Image (tube, rainbow, N blue to C red; front, side):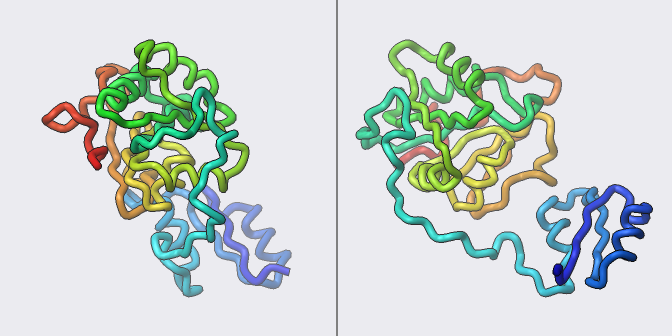
Length: 232
């Protein structure tokens, strides 16, 4: 038996909402799924139970981790013994409309290698094609490692070991942000004021939505030409 039901809907006065309230004895909160202007989606959803003494999304405790060691079997094209600072790159996303040109990430790979960093592509279940495109566009001498994990815990362990995360608007970016990893998140079609990952060190970078942006990620380089935020 539920103690509370929170229903997110585009129509909080719908017949479905009214029927649900009539069929249960516990309280039902019907909450508009669309956040107010410039309101972050996580805060908007948390506000639905504000009167029930909820904790801020940024104050919720993280689950315990077993270790900070990422299994070698998760890496492709690598012996996992390199000691260079890791730049974790996620060129994919759950929606193809959020994916920045693979050339963008290929430049990140090349400049990371040039600055004695270890770029690692994160390849999720739907990211094989875009990771392959990035690999094809990198210089022959600077092919990145690939991280492919079968579990969320292993992905979290890897992200915590990285010096920095750079990726598209995706679940991986949200995980990196909440883990406290220094993160730069690329927004192509979504609004970062609503969807930006929450975390203590997250920077949102808006990419032009019409596809006319330059493939070279100028936003991520310092005046000295080095990857911003990647210094020891």
